[in-house]
Image (cartoon, rainbow, N blue to C red; front, side):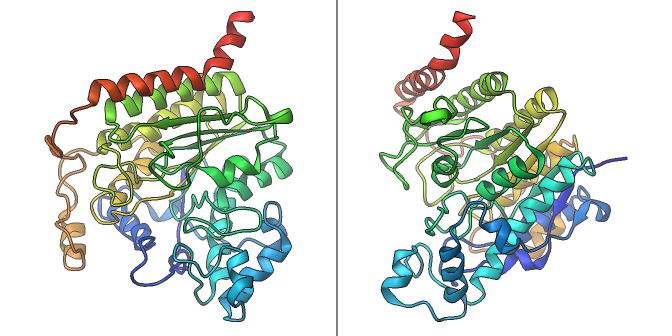
Length: 386
């Protein structure tokens, strides 16, 4: 009997810039441990990743850039040459073995894609992936190679698939959007904090694609301090209408956990209520429209102790039709509390009253609702005409 697969090995933890960098792949290990200790991740469902080949990386990335990343990893890329490729910056510092560590993550997402597309697994999850800011010839926003963009190109080439990419990271999925901005067979849907306040500053509702790809990019830039009610209204409505419009063969979702109220790099007020619902809505869409073909990755998430393990565990729980409520495994709390600089949560849910009431809530909700209407305007118009 086919089951979902979870792509994991310690090789995926090698993507590490430095000790003080906010991007910390320990969160993948924390998620893995939480699921294991909750008896929700069986040995038979864990598969080893593989390293993506240069040819696979070149489906998206320029060969000169791939060579530059290799040089960065062995310490021979210097000065202006590094800066031209977005490497050696404060956001994306160079580190030993950078190419190999990044290629492992891309290969893990491709491994999940192959398992799903070849009918060997119902769904596939690579929590280490979702590096959506990487460009064809430049690193950006903590992202060296863009595993999501490579996976979309791979799915199109190998399986002739129409791919819907859904991105719920608080930061706009710019690298993926621009990679397929003229492509009518790859549709991108990103819900994120407005770029007026947050990197990368893109993802406006007017970014709809161009040329043959016009109408296949959807952006929902929400206002700062957006809460669960508004976030889920936009997300669920957009997913349903975009999937109905695009009719994909497969859904690839990027599941950043940085929209949470605790996240130190963003300004949203989302709680675990949304992170419980997000993957279940994606799964329902895949089951209804794609014969169940759904591949999920991680993404952003910088409160690695209190938020990411629970949020990413919910993806796996959704894939396996498991609902866990109440207390987290005490074994997990006891193991990791010693290393955590904050008090770990005790339950899967966030407690009531996590933050003070947002004074502009009605205004924020009205503004977000208008954004949703603008973002879906052209597909709603096309339905009226038919």
